[in-house]
Image (tube, one colour):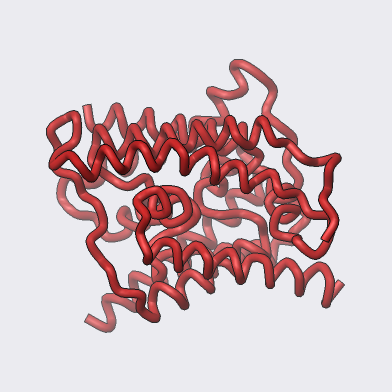
Length: 138
Length: 143
């Protein structure tokens, strides 16, 4: 059942990304270009998602376990550390260069878009570098 | 700042956002997990027991979404003007940055803000800031 709902969630997520316009890098860059001809549409993507999310997570926090009886695995970290901030700043630079974040990257790959595949390859390499550095440190 | 009224797509943006919210709701209320895409992918590079199947299932759903979409309607047009070299640099930065920052637009921007997590609010502000600044530099300073 877990895998079925994971698949359903991934599908719904991907459809949402396509419908919203997030899978079109030109549109994402139009949203990030506040000094140019600004296309604020994507604020509404976050807005729509967060309205539903607020309800879902409020319910999730109240429950000790999921409706399938699984433990609620919500993040517990609280500290605003360098890793969080520098990592997010770095992600933003990459997002601003291409207009692609991880979800849309996978959808573009699924569409068979060559540049999407190239981006996903580089993104996986980036994640691999992170794992390698973490293991070396340990 | 001028608003690009021609390309404004408020209804589809909102509808897509609601679908994304529903996906996150399904994932947390049934599976008890955060629908954070960079974390779900990154976890595959550090596999734990019993982890592989649900991570793969979620990602297969994401990859299959365009196929399902086009059974109903033609896929919306996409435009990528970024060259290959820049795409590789961008991908590397997104991969490293999201793992160090423990999340991306989905995990921090949607799920984290919905949980009212201070960490996610700070992370989202940080990646939006450099996103805006990067586009400003590329389009208005370098161009």
